Length: 342
Image (cartoon, rainbow, N blue to C red; front, side):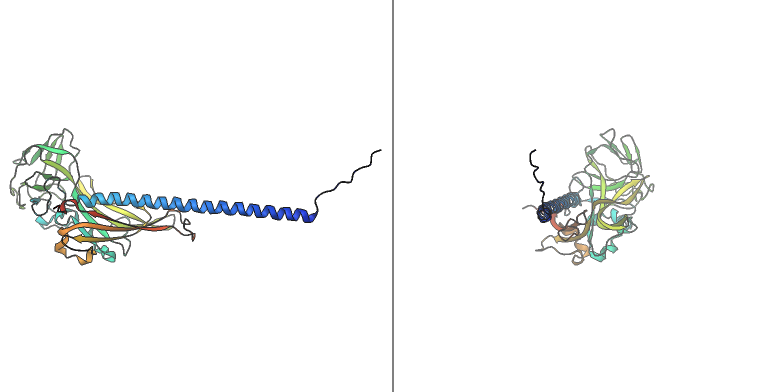
């Protein structure tokens, strides 16, 4: 009979050494995996922050560039504008969105609580962050076919001008512009009646200068004069509570037509914007200054706006310190119709 061979295995020491080596390899692989995951989360958060900053600057810059534009002759020194709104300065009104003379107006830090556009907004203003009001005319592409001033009716070349009763619009030609509310719309006929609607018109005459009497100064716009809806916005940082946490966002107060009544309404534009600081350049100055350093009569001379945003990542543990990633961005935008090219 052949002799049986003795069976042999690993000793306890050999098993412990093998387990130790395996643990070292696993720890190394885990460390590399966690490091790569952390790098990925940080890069993804950085990309999100940069995308949010780009969107915020693009949307806000458009409103800054168009501030004070009528669509025709918008140079402040030669602009002949009649403001017929009953809540505008011509009629003694004080609503911010009807004051074309302040088409650019900023408010500093805690002083932004004095911004009339922020009264009663759904998302409260965040203290120590700036805000800015911008008023201009949208590019609507609507033109005048005929102007019957005896009845206060403008007829457009477009069969469907895209305007409804209560809309506020800028009517302009190379001679002058008029800010007026259309009290009724039927097809391509736009009526701007007197003492009708909200806020309504203080005069039926569209001429310059505006006079708040029944007939006012008459003026007949010639064919192909332009009609553009009023754009009145206010940018600010507001806060809201989401799932029990306070979230700061960039908000835009826009003038919406609600059942024929122009109503300022706040909309969230970019989330996790924690701060906004704004400085202004006045024509002829050598540097940018805060809003508090600009006299009330100098706002029509502001020709550039410098905005600094601080944004925070949505991922609350994206930073190397297991906290949100935070970045600050700055951009400067010129007010298009106030820049003098020599």
